Image 1 (cartoon, rainbow, N blue to C red):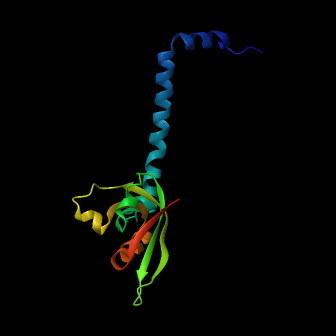
Image 2 (cartoon, one colour):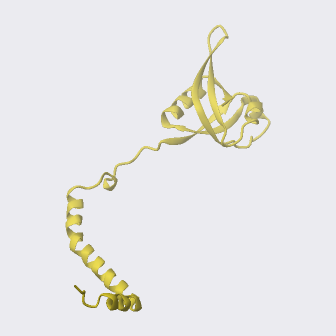
Image 3 (cartoon, rainbow, N blue to C red):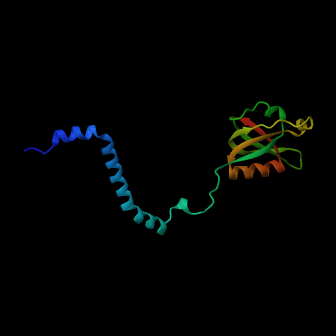
Length: 150
């Protein structure tokens, strides 16, 4: 059995590549147009979760924290991982340490504004989950904070 124009058709197709590519694109475009309206109607009936205008919570936030010992902050570099420890003072003068944030990433260490900053500690910006940032802010308001390098 012989297929009409078998070998010669292939040679002709290779010689006229532009026509073959144009024909392929036309067939693809026709297929997309034929299936397009049904997909659009289906998408409008059942919008995807990304299409809804719901705000998404940010996983990591920047949390500025004042560390009590400014000399310790000078040891830190952006990218370091640290544990943040809070020492709550009691009425007898003792302190009960507790870990507020584990594995917090140092994002930035702003420059000190003057000599008074050394007495009150130094500012460090950490990248932490939102819940940890809330704990850091609360601990920073009521306790002296320190860091340990991980």
